[in-house]
Image (cartoon, rainbow, N blue to C red):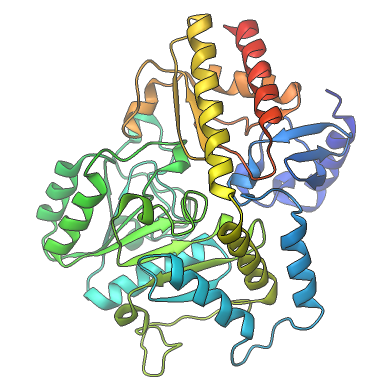
Length: 429
């Protein structure tokens, strides 16, 4: 795989931007510069073509440059854009669709990134409960802000300990965020008991996709709902990844557990910048978008025509075409195919996933939480992915990262990928 042009451009990028990238997690080797995307494929500056399973960490549920979505965005921009006052017809239509499908969404407000959405949800929770503390889970990611930027991809010796994710974070924010172990209700209950009457919100990825795909055990999410009810605490489902990718109503529609607030993003607009916070009307009307509300909510680009038009188009396609049926079937074929390869080659590994998401952990059992993932062979995991990349199959060459299938992927794409997976495993195991 030639990448001379990518390397030239990467050196140039470093002259003008620190590290040459605009999100920290993008700085991985090989340093590729991408120039084109179409359907299930992406292309780099050297003309290399990759079958894309990264999907920009999940937004592309339909596929890159999906014409029906792009056309709606272009049509919208031909007549409207951004006003900074009042509302637009697109905002109304988009909000109506979300409240129709997402169980917790009696009302919704738009912003531009998942981090903004979780920030707004947590602030609202503190206002409603008049408390300060927050529970999150080790390994889960809820954005870049101080409220939640701790104990994400912790080193083994820092699991469950005070592990801020950045310099410059406020001690008050770090220490008001409590860390629990996913799939351990006793740990959560103990944390509630140790902080009686102090916890404003519990925020959780219903499926922790930041660390691949850790499935909630039977009764775990319901148990969180019960504990929050018993303690007067707001339950926030961070469905920035799971929402829309796993069901048009979010994973809450699958697990039949309804949170107080939900944050959404990524797949809702098929790659266009768009996010939302939604919840019960009694809570949402505390935002000062509602006359008399006392929780600040603002953003110059909130509800822009680009994001609202893209979300409407994406949701309409989900409503009228077999999007989830297709991606779930291909996801199951991929997972089962990899398991069959492991059996044939005598490889002891665990294939995790749900719907269109999967990853292979190089360990001998199903992980239930972040601590279990310390058993994953990280060096092999990354080496495996880099070998696939050399063959034109793009998975993020980084440890414990998930893969995604889009509506643009075909059965043939999956079979080709499975053959490449078998070839690479034969080569490196």
